[in-house]
Length: 391
Image (cartoon, rainbow, N blue to C red; front, side):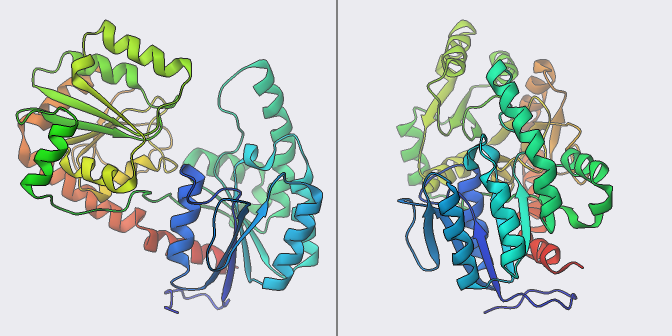
């Protein structure tokens, strides 16, 4: 095993990761758990406990099915047999069946029946994110559970500034045991440069001409990406371009509304909907891209996995600034910011990057340096070990 640099005295030998989802499933928590565990296993004996019929491999235990009390009893027994120093739980409420309180019973059992330190990463504080009468009820249930989860856990990890501040304020007695750690890239770099023949093949596949600049946005089409503003900006860009919308497309009404908007704005010919493609092809498309553009309705934060993907691929990024945007992101130094909902400013920034290759290269290289400093999985593991070993 390799050693992690840490000045703390507490020794860590075994870490048990509990995640209800794992590869080969694809998604935010699935990818996070997979890449984090993969990197962590270079330094410690690492075990993953996840759902049945999903994953197989060394030190992978597919246990969960319906998240019943019986399954949690088996889980505690398994943890007792593994005898880890750390039990690190990846928590997103709906995955653990939000209407049940079994999870709280498991935490208590783990706390009093094992010797492991309990660490919880809160990927979301309160799911779901959309408002409706049903969702309001769900949110109330989760808000009732959350104080108990935080109180029982030895340490709590969040990914966004506002969540860190909110939990630290509400649980001031536990402030020293609440931490913020960013999320890394879920798309490994395929190649840093592509042969001309490969570029031509990809361009031909997606109908991109040689004179068109390629804008890309990656990730599931969801509520927080501001496609409407992006589409309006593209409509008025005075350069030939293609926008690659890379990732899974839902069958909900939002997707069809976007298709209708593209048709209304007469930019259908400028948009390529790739739907789901494998990690290697995502990387190839990003390597081919000129600009990465990800306008967000609440601004960029440390929880957005689709941001470090662009940094790893040395792409200049145009995004929006919000209350959770990391302070080390500086406009026109390592990223480009536009105001939320401002399609004219977004258009101007896109045009600025298309016509100036030097700025593209400078921002792209600065972004790559940011990736190595804050978002690489080795760096994230190093930060997490500081959490594990903190007194």
